[in-house]
Amino acid sequence: MNDRYSRQTLFPPIGQPGQEKISSKHVVMIGAGALGSGNAEVLVRAGVGRLTIIDRDYVEGSNLQRQQLYTEEDVAEKLPKAAAAEKRLKAVNSEVGIRGIIGDATPEVLAELAEGTDLIIDSTDNFETRMAINDIAQKYKIPWIYGACVASFGMSFTIIPGETPCLNCLLKTIPIQGMTCDTGGIIGPAVQMVIAHQTAEALKVLVEDWEAVRTSFVSFDLWRNQYSSMKMSRAKDPHCLSCGDHPEYPYLNADNRAKTTILCGRDTVQIRPPHQSGVNLQEMAGRIKALGYEVKGNPYLISAEMGPNRFVLFQDGRALIHGTKDTAQAKSLYNRLLG
Ligand SMILES: [Zn+2]
Image: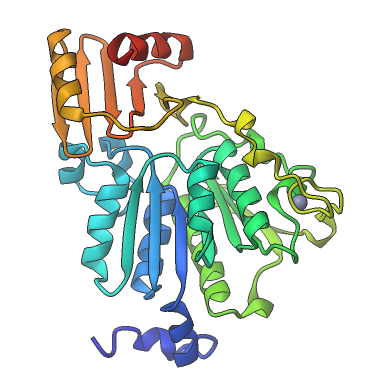
């Protein structure tokens, strides 16, 4: 497909040299939900060299309204998002090296990927992971693009280590922690607007058009017709523990990492065992069946149901316990099943 990127190379700020840069770069996408789906699709169509996409969840019916990579078939098969995304993205552009990783984007996983990563895109839905991305990006000098949305509201900011303030600096100005996803639902156009901002910035970074990179913090509300762009250059804190003169990267510290997490916007608790050695899914399916559960599965996970109890167990030993936000209750179920 010789003319595959012709419309993009005709765009003067990219051109043929820009296209060559794009195709030599590796982007890491953290999260394969609504933002991750759209960001990944745009960059894969744009011909990025390699794309790694990490996600810990699987596809459910309520995702289809806005998570553009997934189909009803993925829901029926309960495919992990990282596996379904990898399959779809490979079909979109076979020239791109695409790798899906099923699991948590822990500081360890992020550090392993850091070498050879040109850009990280935040498509996650939780504060803990964002702050870990922020510290990894500062430590390894990798540009990253923050993005978030809820209801009809969204925001984005581009972080270039050594140049711009980091997310930890911004927290003193903007109440980013207060953004939760389970309060106001979400509409597709808000997702797409954040994706548009993130991917435009991504292309600028990939072609190294540093002057074009947006330095302001953009936020909007598509329902209330509001759009704002805040200058952030003065937010950079020389004493910041993530990007200041004496960085300590506080969010890479293992003590800050929860092993039990309530998932965003859902009655679901994730349990991550301390040692992720993996489990034998077939053997586990037998054990769980013997306890009276109805068990289904695919090569990546098993899902089990008995009355109101419903959970999914992944190959890496993680479990998503559905129907609860009570971490103690979820843990006791996990221990009963796998202990
Ligand atoms: Zn900072």
